Every structure is written in C-alpha cells, then in structure tokens.
Length: 492
Image (tube, rainbow, N blue to C red; front, top):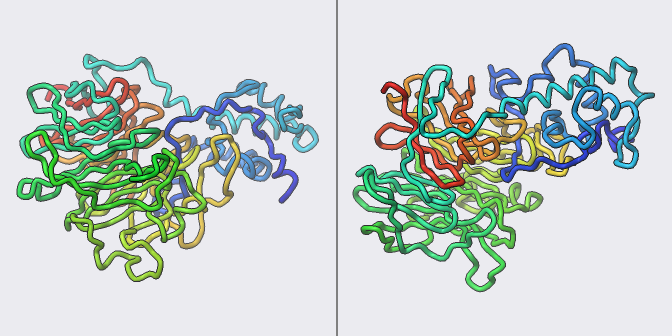
C-alpha cells in the first residue's frame, strides 16, 4: 500500500474525531440503475460531479479515500475538533496536526490545490444542512410539500417505540412496542394491551419488532410477529425469530415459532426484521448480520444478513434459490445484507423492495431478486464509525447495486408504498422513515427507478414505522414519546 494511503490527507485530523454517530448505521454499494444520474442515485452533495472539483476529487481519491472511504460526504459527517471553516481546513491540510496523525501536505499540493480541496470538502459539509430542520412540529403545524399541504393527527400515544404496525379488517390498529408489548387501538377508544406473547429479549436493538396479518386473515385469524428470542438455556444469547398466533379478543392463542435464526449471538444488535407477504402468499422477512459482518452475510450456512422466503406455516418453498445447494440454508432468498429494517411489496410490479442500514454513510434501497448477493461487507460506500475504512471496493462482479443510497446515512427504518387516491401526487411513491434526521423520506418511483426525493414531516421525531391504513391514510410510528400519527391532506 502506498505511504500516502497509509497517511491519507485529512486523516481523522480535520474531523478529529468526535464521531457524530447515529444509532442507525448504513452501508451501500453503488447503483447500476440505467438512466439515474450519480447525484440522484447516491443522494450525495453532487460535489464529485462539479467540474470545479475534478482535480480536488482526484486528490481526495488518491490521498484520502484509503482511510476515509470513497465517499467524501461520509468522511465529513462528524464534528470537527479544529474547525470546519475554509481557513481551518486549509491550515490542517498545509500544516497538519502531527500529534493527531495528520501530516502536513504543504510540499504535496500548491496553494490553489489546497484551497480547492478545502472547497470540495465544504461542499460535502453542506449536504448535512438540508437535514437541519426547525423546531419540532405539532398537530397544529401545516406542512407544505412540493405538491401537497398536509397535517398530522395523533392516533395512539404511550406506545414506547412503535416498531411495527398493521390494521385489522375492522380498522383497529395493532402496534408493537419494541419494549415487548403489543397494543390494539380501536378507531374510537383507548389503547388496549394484547396478552399471550412469548418471552422476548428486549435489550439493545432487540425486542418485539414487526407485525403482519396473513393475507387471508379474515378466514384464518393468523397474525405474524418478529422478535428477539432469548436462548432457552443461555441467558447471554438471543436471535431473531418469527412467530404466528391467532387473535382471540385481546389474547394471542396457538402461539408458535415458524422461524428461528441460527446461530444465536451474544450481541444485541442487527436483528432486522421486517415482514411482508407477496401476492402469491409467500412470507418474506429480513434478518440482520447480528454484528458479525465477516462471517455471516456472505456465507449461506447461517440465517444472518439475509432476506428469507417461506410458506405461511414455515415450510421452505421448493423453488427457493439455495434449496439444492449443499450446506446452504433453504429459506435464504437473497444474501449479503447488513441490517434491513424495511421490506415492502411494490403494488405495481409485485417486486419485493428493501432498505438497510450500512455502517457510516450509505443506507441503501434495493429491489430484492432471487438468489442475488447484495455485497455486504465486500462492497460499500460506508466507512467505520471511527472514520476508518473496512473496504475500498464499491462494486464487484456478481454483487448487486442499490437503486439509491444515502450519504450521510439517514438511519432508514420502516417502508411502504403509497396506495389509494388520498395523495394523488404521491401515489406509487415509496416512503422510508429516518431515525437519525427524524423525518419521512418520500421517494417518487418511475419503473424500477427512484427519480425524485422529498423530505416530509421534518423533525417529527425518530420515525420507526410507516404503513398505509385501510382508510387510505399514511400512518407513521414515532419515538419519544411513542406516538402513531395519521397524515391528512389539508382541505380534504
């Protein structure tokens, strides 16, 4: 490795290093979707495309990316020990901070090159500004999108962390609290607790997670829940599990697990896990890599870092891609994932879409295809939380590319497509919640491409879940305090 990559420009120096880490991470290979510009595809600042910065980008790539990652926007996503004004950056580049590992580059670059590189970095810093929202909104706030005015109405409060939600045929809301509780909220009336849940390991990122009704719920009464399951004999271990049960009044009966991810882990993060039935009645769900990126996602002998596909009773479909692969887990549908916390079916195409957290820089949106490898952790636009890199690859043959990735990471959580006629301008768009920047991301879709984005519900709170209700309204679950809101067009 070149010495100038071992001691790259701007090593944890400029930033040094109070890492502005969000609870929700991010990963992301680059997209190969035809017709999308790089700026749309990556949701970066666009500095890399600006002709003013051609040489500056080349210098960043040659001197900085080895330690700070290929995406400059990910590098600048932090607090700055020595300041982030242009004069601060110029001083750091030219003079360095040797005690912090940052060498001087006054003999490497001339003054113009130093100034251009500082300007290039400042463009990346500006990309964070669009997430600097005003004060937290209230139910009296009137929001203005590009093509719609809307407001919010509180539907349920006191939910803790509203991780997942769905609706009964009569319109009652079912919502999970990651703390290990399940609630029912009638269209009129108070929040009601539902009993009969199994033991749940509600620690770290674990707890009671997603919820989904069987497509034929009105006939069979089956409800599906994902959760972090404690080990039967070792209290240090837990895993992602999927259970189903029947709902009788406010009690779950005939409770049984239909899936249990192996191996169990002592780590309390990256469980996944979202549930979604497709039009044929197969159940898709995500399992995170459980914090073991070097072992789990790229190996087919475990359940972690994968999207799975099973029958409604847990049986393995005979046409799953790895059923006949020696040593492979039969339920695996796709692999190479980090921590997918969004899975939704595109109502127009029937395709399964997913988004996932990566490390620092590059949450991504993918269209899930049978048997495909989505690259984690071999390819990524993210870097480690401490500013170091774990890969220099952003693409590799045989690995899929997302249709969109975010730099900096938004902490993507929850996903649904807009259906019905209450929001004509949004119909067919995909919605993604942001934990880190606390808003709802509207992604307008054309074919299999995301062609435009808009930031909705600015500073609403850590947005954990989003669903379409049977009444045609969009519902969002927000943390602190745990509240489910309904989005209502103004003047409806």
